[in-house]
Image 1: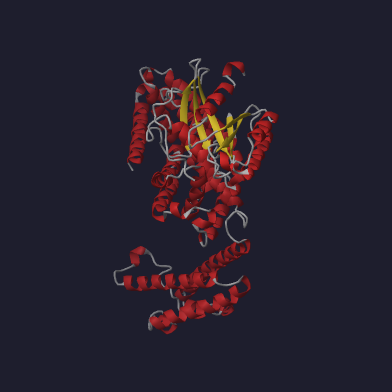
Image 2 (image 1 turned 135 degrees about the horizontal axis):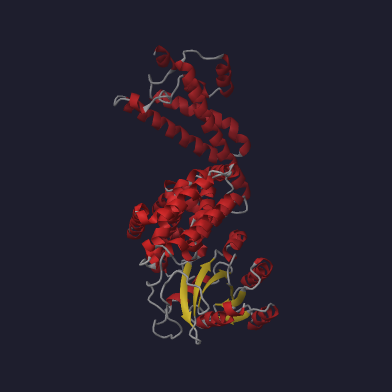
Length: 200
Length: 387
């Protein structure tokens, strides 16, 4: 399961610039946000993050310890910034019971499934229910149908994703980590939906 | 690794710097607060959660005091941070014995985890955790294990946490190398299983207590972001090991139960044989074998030749008493033990549970005889009694 061979040029976005690194100055204009990624193994969780983080910058720049934790700062139009600290989780069934250790305190949960795999869609619904029960009440949830480039193998209709997300008050988007489609849109939209310290 | 030595040396300088500043006459007030805080701890029974809160509150109040202090008026954020690292280290070294593994429950959980890992070590393979062959790299994992084992070499929460991060760093290096060469992503799907495997191989003592100690006493402002993420991974690896059962692994459930049974048996035999061995040695030293001892040896039968003759005459020896001439004997004893252990493990892994116990004894006997016949004249009962 590769992430796709064609990494985009690092110049092609004007989405964000890294803010000056100071270990988490938390104010209304510069948010630091914990984002947890959930979903079956193989749906492309880490590819989405890699695409988001490294698509815009030199592949070697921001990686410190490894690839399962990555951070990326984006600047929004109102000149505020959001620093996403992205926590990847192991998607294999046997680690499902450990998930609460990871999503505790998360402001955002991105739940990913593979549009060619109905099983991964049911697993995504399982995570939504689990977060509704045990996640923090004001968590922002996004449902992501990944591998949208594999149209000919599609087994989960767009409408199914849209309907499920709507019913559960979530944001829904289909992405392709391979072609980078909608990857930045996903994170931008999340940033917009975050409760700001002033209005909470 | 460069980064590690850098981090180490930085933490050393910050600590020395902290101590130097504390020796400055102007910081007498700070020194007084620190001392009285440490003393105040001896007035109460240890209560981990309370203690954690008190220490964290003290860190915050000291940080505020430093910011207002003449000695730090020109200090940068980084200077303050260094001083706080120094303070954390100083306080936690002083309070270590009463805050680390402070309750009997902690010690109990530590032992349970460690014993379970001992059993798992005898049969667990990377494929049982679905670590794909392409990611398997036992040689590099050994480095990761070493880093993790350093956790008990330090008392300061910061340094303990660094051991964990360095362990994760080694694992990630391997994963990233493969990711780059094979064009596969190296995310948590791959990382967590490897960390669990490395933790089992390393079996760091007092794992639970170490994690609890870091959680409670590492400055809260520092247990965030990446450090918190990798710390959480080790917490979850420990949780996985504690709850691990036949369904947790890619392994036949019956085979799992049998392997656990076999491991328990090996542990039992190893413990028994070493304790019997010690007892028999003590008896021999006193030149009298008690009735009880004879009975015990007859009960276990197969151990009789070996134990009574004392295959292990060095059990009670002190290193000072040994001479170069003992090397031959020690080496041959060592080889005996390894040979026996290997035969035992091999045999056990091929057997069903019901066959295991009686046959185990038989094998032990055979291997002992083989070894004795290979080394005639040494360690036989006659030789020993002549001493």
